[in-house]
Length: 355
Ligand code: SF4
Image 1 (tube, rainbow, N blue to C red):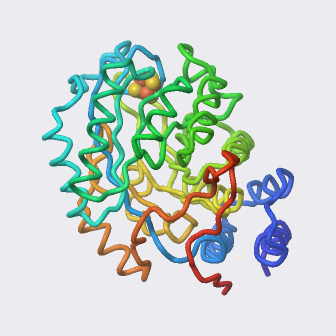
Image 2: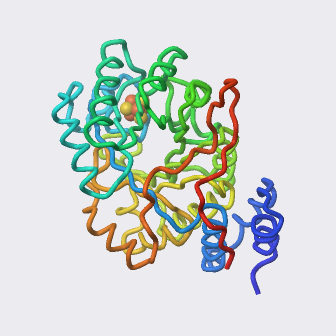
Image 3: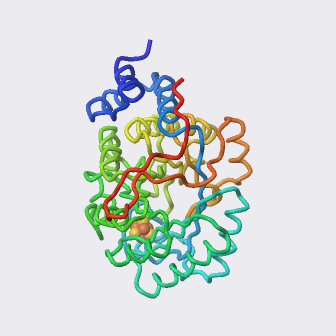
């Protein structure tokens, strides 16, 4: 017999088709880890019912690495820490196109151009926009960007250039954020996340788990993200980078990480929940369980500063799990309609399956 908080959550999400309240989510979060199999089972049903069985694949390119003036405590690309990370200016267009073609060959449908900056200055923005155009023309891939803090006009220009999705993570919950970063604020990040959506781009907004947050803060973080109504939520699991302030920090245990993924699925039932950096290090043999615990998107290939496993291994995993690869990023939860208002489109024609 499932624990009462799981019965309540199941009724809410699968029968009443409503989102959980914070108290309901906290009650689930406080269940002992011995209840994890039941929680994972519910998260999987919620994922199937709200999103379908598909898994979206994306690749990243770190198009400008290191020497970032900000001081995010987890990040090896900050100029303030001695991490030995590669430092290079914005890559040549040829290098970006080569990575995009490799993304296509790896079976991914979305390509995200990432740069390590506080926010893009004019010359960088122009080069990114040129690269977006070239990648779209040459590969047909959907292009996402992650360029840091934006001004309204910059967001509008990126949207007009065809950038489908803008990534800007909150990284941590409001309460923890000042311990993670002092050079910009949590509200700065929220403002850019809102700007991206207002400009008509889909919002990709998540963060890093395992940076010392309490279980309650982890739940609050998921609710803070849900308030921004992101189309995609990347979940990074802290993989401590030597030389950063969090370089000696413990990682989550695999069971804690699976619990967190499942909780995020219950709180964000209709988002693309993407397993991102740290999955290999933290989940190890249990990576497949992450996809059964509610995640429905992966980054394939390498991450920004760490090596991922081969795309072939991920395709083999998806085949073994019977999870089809999504043929595109899917429709975002919000689009700008002809009047400029945000309308909520139906998701793609994914059958609702409740087991
Ligand atoms: S997370 Fe982004 S803004 Fe923060 S230091 Fe790293 S590259 Fe800079």
